[in-house]
Amino acid sequence: MREFDRITFDPSVMGGRACIRGMRVTVSLVINLVANGMTQDEILKAYPYLEPEDIRQALQYVA
Image 1 (spheres, rainbow, N blue to C red):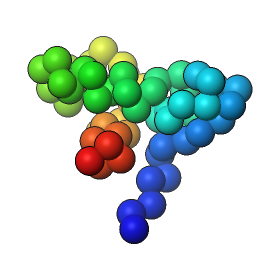
Image 2: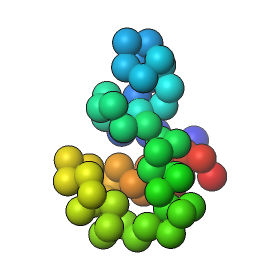
Image 3: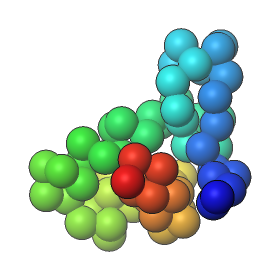
Image 4: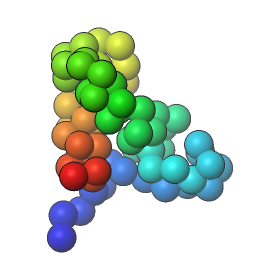
């Protein structure tokens, strides 16, 4: 089983939904951006505090 060390759950952040590194960026947001055609580079430009590994783990988490 893969460890998702960048996917966090905290009831005080976004209602406990799966987030990226405790930030107010949900996994579902990242997945929706990809599903709507944004590339990794476009996501990183729009959300400069994210890292490529954050996106990779979000995609693997929902797979």
